[in-house]
Amino acid sequence: MISEKHAVLIAEFAEKAAELNAELADVAKSRNKLIRHMLRLGATPSELSHVTGMSRMRIYQIKDGK
Image 1 (tube, rainbow, N blue to C red):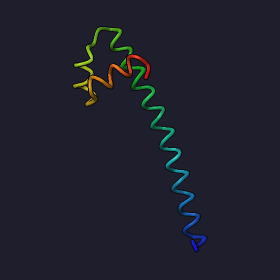
Image 2 (cartoon, one colour; image 1 turned 135 degrees about the horizontal axis):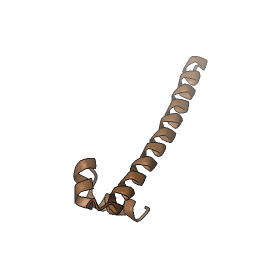
Image 3 (cartoon, rainbow, N blue to C red; image 1 turned 90 degrees about the horizontal axis):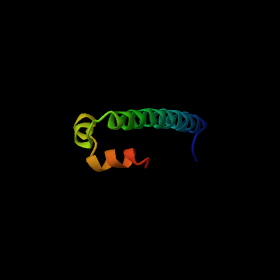
Image 4 (cartoon, helix red, strand yellow; image 1 turned 120 degrees about the vertical axis):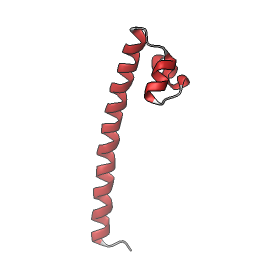
């Protein structure tokens, strides 16, 4: 049986993980918006791949809204 102390601790970690996941989703959304903007300004997928460390395929997916 799990103790009350451990149950509270697990719940706190779960809440923090949910908060961080939401924050990460917001950051990724902002990053993707900026990548699409840079592509419209003429940046190439290769340039963005180099700068972000993401694959060119991922840059194309972001460009296509995936």
